[in-house]
Structures are given as C-alpha cells and as structure tokens.
Image (cartoon, rainbow, N blue to C red; front, side, top):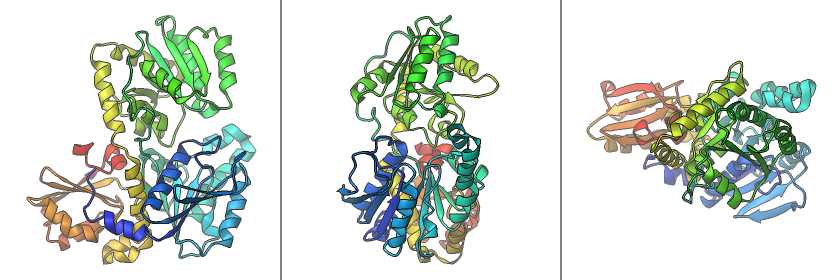
Length: 491
C-alpha cells in the first residue's frame, strides 16, 4: 500500500498527547479472548506508540487484576461477562471529561458511551460483525429479540452522530442493511502479520487428502455441517481425514456426534491445542474449511493463508471478503442442502489441488494475499479517522462539509487522475484531503479512494489544484481496494 506522503506526521501529531479510552468486552489475556480482542489491543498499542495516552477498559476475568499497565497502556478491569457494561459505563461517567476521544467496541452490543460523554468528545464505534441471528440462537426468542433491539434500533440512535469502523466490506453492508445504520462507516480490516503461519515455512502436506477446521467450536460455526459433508464424501474418498482444532462449548458434543455416526476413523476432534501441534496439523492439511454462517472478517482464514493453506467456506459475510475465490480458496453457495453443497465444494477443491503444481501456486497466492494486511496499516487507518474527528477544522470549505456529513459510507468509489506528473498533483492536493482517504501513484495515474456519497468534494480539490475535469474518471472500488487501501495494480 502506498500512502499519501503528507499523512503520517500530521496524523501522528493529531493523536500524540491525546487521552484516549478503548472500551472492549475482554482483553487479550481473558480466557475467552478472540480476534476482536487482538484487534482492539493492536489498535491500542499503535496509538500508544504514536504518543497517545491510552486506557483500555474491559471486563475482569478469573484471576485477573483490577488494574495494570502493559505496553505503556493502562488496563482497567471492571465487572464480569455481563456486569462489565454498566460497570464500565459508570467508570466512564465519573471520568467523562478526562478523555479526548473514545473507541467503543461493539461485541453484539456496545457500551453506549455517548450517553455519558460530553457532546464534544468524538466516539469511534467498532463493529466486527452483526449478531442479530446469534442472539436468537444462543439466548432464545425473547432475550434474542431484546439483544437485537439493543444492537439495532437503540445503538443506531445512540451512535448516529459518531463514526463507525467495520472490519470488512460485507460487515459494513450488514451494518447498513440489517442494522439500518445511518452513521458514517469506515472499513478498517485486521492485520495478518501476527498470524501463526506468517513467520514460518509450511512443512510437507499429508499424501492423503486432509482437511483442517480451526476455530472455536460454537453453534454458529456449524461444525456439524462439516461432519455431514465428510460423511457424504467417505464413500468416494475413504482415505479422507478431518482435524477439528479449537476449544469451545460444543467440543464434546461434536466429538460424540462423530463417534455416533461412525466417523471416528476419519474425524479427530482435538479441542484446544498448543501452537506447535496446531501448526503441524495445518501444515499436513490440503484445505482449511469453515462452515460458519457468518464472520466479521475470518481471522482463521487469514491465519491459514499465511501458512499457504487455502480455505473452502460458505459465501457469507466476512468470509466472502477473506477468501479470494479461485486464488486463495473457494466459496460455496448455501441453498437448500448446505451439507451437500459443502461436500461438493470440498470434492471439487480436492480434485483441483491433486493436479501437480496447483497446490504450490495457490499457496504462493495465499501468502501474498495474507501479506497485504499489516497491523501497522490497521493502526494507521484508525489514526486517520481519529485525526479527521479530532481536527475537522483542518478541511477546506466544501470538503469539510462533506466530511462532517459523511466521513465514509464506506468508501466505494475510486477517482483516477491521468497525468504526466501524478506525484506533483498528489503533493499539491494531499494537505487538502481528509486523512482517511487513501491515495497511490502508478502507471501515470493518481488513484484516490473517496466516499461514494460525495466524490464532488474531492473533485473540487482537484479542480482547485489545476487538474482538468477531463483527466478525472470514476469507478467502483473492488473488495481488495476497500480492504487494503491500495489500487488494484498493487493488490
């Protein structure tokens, strides 16, 4: 990704010395921590490294201290699984004038921090995925409807004056369509450079076709569908193996189910494993597979890709962004027979991978795709948005009005400026662009990612810099461009 040369220092200066609070349900050391906790902590570390005074406010798990300092970040723990919400909100109310901005992470429901903060304190709401169906699955119809009401109608009203970060384009669309969110939404994906396979080379795969499913074993991951798919494939592929790796409340249920269906010779349910044993199973596999009905992003997919392992998954939110069909894996359309469709998708993928050279080429593409995502890039993009929120007066006239109305929707339009001197044009306009815009130069072209709602504001900046209208064209951004913040020629 090529960033505007004018962005880094001004954004760092905007955040440096600011007092920021990050509210997240758990911290990375909580027994039930997952990808959302990794995301929140990485953002906190980036902000602290660039000079912000960061307080990470979260729940207190068994054996955890009430307060400590890690990586220069003050960690405050209040309440348990559900008590964390009122306890943290009360803690913030008593310190409502202490912070310059708040990052409020919505894990199903947010902390509703705008209710206790002064109106001048900007709030950045982070949404990993929409939980509406999960509420009903885990808590039944009555409590499930209440949770969906908090996540949807209540939250969208409380956060209507803030800015929301979604971790993938499909999550952003779900926030818009299913939660009917009207606040600005910015796509800021996870990094992948801390993935288990990012710093190692894969060992030789098993000569037998082998599948691996990595992740917590919970109802919405639908591991039972994977058992059904293997059951259907075992006649044609008697040497097929499946390893299920990860803890969770349904581990024993899935283990019993595999045994009762006579799959014990094909399926091994490992539960949680140390990293070395997990990595060995990933290395031996031909394919990683996910039967989840939706994710915010698909962190396990990127972890597999970092090790050169492609993924077969359903074409659902988050996973349709993390998997590049035909390049880093395959997406299966879910219709009337999900298990049958998954079995057919796995069968086709295994046939393709058995052709000499195909597995090696896809492994290289998996690593390249995973390598496009860095936690430093995630932190920079969050700082960009915070910079826009903390210094909106830095924008000129028309561009400022556009940014005030809709910082991002998310950005899904690209402006392409054809010029003999793209670097010079970028140098002239960069100080006038909102920090959360992405720019790059290549092939005699200046590429700018802008909000679909109002590219006219950026066009006005270009016109003011002497760029003729005939030199500017417009097109929709690709998923890769939205995720990486880089043009297609760099993706």
